[in-house]
Length: 271
Image 1 (tube, helix red, strand yellow):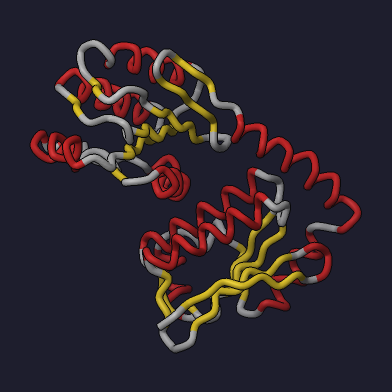
Image 2: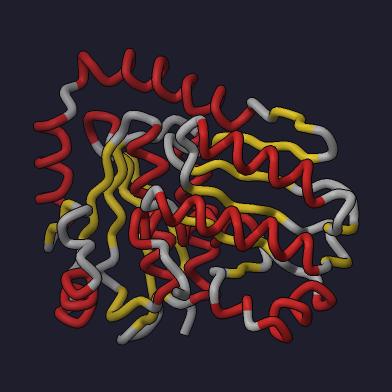
C-alpha cells in the first residue's frame, strides 16, 4: 500500500494537507509518519499557518504517527496559526480519544466542515499581520544557536530546548561543563530538553551521572528530557547500566522533539 501527501489551497489562506492512499485500511506508521512530518514542517515554514490535515484515508496510526500530528500542532501554534484534523475512521477517532488528543485537536468528519470552522476563527484581515509577525518570531527562535564551551543550545519552541553536546567523549573532564549548562537552563525555566549525543563515542560513569542528574532536575519541575543517541557504543553502555529504560532515546533530533511535544509534563520515564 502506498501513501502520499498533497496540498490543496482553499479560501481564506487555508491549506488542506491531504494524506492519500491507494487502498483501504491505511496505517500512519513510522515510515510514512516521517514523510508527513516533512510535509508539515515545509508548509509551516513556508507561511501556511492555517492547516487542515485530511486523514480520511487513514484507518489507524502508531505512536510515531500520533507524535508527528501533535508535533505539527505545536509547531503551527507556536507560529501563531491553527490546525484541524479530518478523521472518518472510528478506530482512529478512538485512538485519539484514548490518548487524550481529542482535546488538543479540532476534529471534523469532512474537509468542508473543517475549512468553514477555521475560516470563521481566522478572519482574512488579521491573518497577514499575524503570519508576518509570528512566523518571523518562529524563525528567530530557530536561528538563535548559543555556544556554551564545547556545547551549543537553541530554543526550538516555547518549551523545548535542544542541547548539542560537543566533542566525542563525555567523561570526568567534559561532564562538569555540560552539567553547569544543564543546571543553568533549568534555573532559567527550561524544563524540557533534548540532549543530542550524536558526536559522542564514549561515555563513562561521570557522563552518565550528568544525564541522570539532569533528568531528575527536569522531572522535579514536571519537565522532560530525551536523548539522541545514534552510536552503538553509547547505547551499549546505557543498556548495560539499565539507563536505557529511564530515558526516551531516539536516533535523530526530530522524533525526540516530537516525543516531548506529545507527552508534555507527562514525560517521566522510569522511577
